[in-house]
Length: 113
Image 1 (cartoon, rainbow, N blue to C red):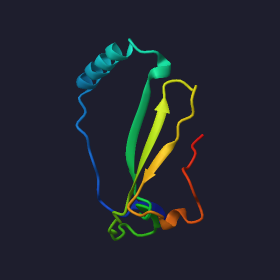
Image 2 (tube, rainbow, N blue to C red):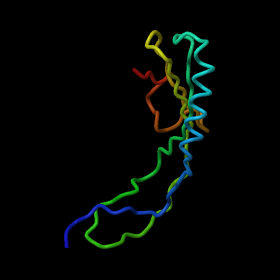
Image 3 (cartoon, rainbow, N blue to C red):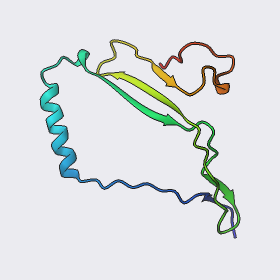
Image 4 (cartoon, one colour):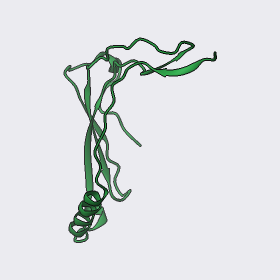
């Protein structure tokens, strides 16, 4: 019996993907964007950062490992990109606290390069 990497929780997500619908929407987006210069096309997306979570996998010599309750404490991170590299865009971190402990000793925005 060797040592294996095992998942510690059973949470899983799935998305029903219809390739035809995706291709159709990409075509519509292309039709709209063809009237703009590349330097005028920006994108912003946000994602949740679960900075207190522990890893979902562990090294184990047993068959199964007990599950863990995941911490739901989160920050929202907004990332900005441009179609061309003419301008550097940063990111914004939104949280519940004015001074989150995880950024102790840091000030200002985090530059992404």
